[in-house]
Amino acid sequence: NPYKFGVDKELFIAAEGLYTGQFLYCGRKAALTVGNVLPLGGMPEGTIICNIEGKVGDRGSFARASGNFGTVISHSDDGFFFSSRRRHTRYWRDWSSDVCSSD
Image (cartoon, rainbow, N blue to C red; front, side, top):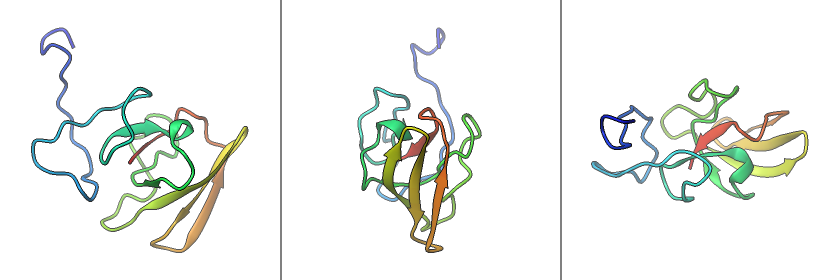
């Protein structure tokens, strides 16, 4: 952003552990900390995640509700497998590695 020296203000769903004034980082180079948004391809197995995109750029469609979260179970060349603890369901989809999620 040329007008604010690279700082953009956006609205995010608050993950548990965020606090007022905390900086959130998005993208492949973001650190794996609470609130940051990373692609699922860069998250290790066992990571607790929320607000998972169904398609690239849809800003999250899985595990969005309060108290709802998922766990990355495994990675594969053709998709990702994660389970949602709130509804006790498991999802296997052929997502691309660019689909993002909040940590």
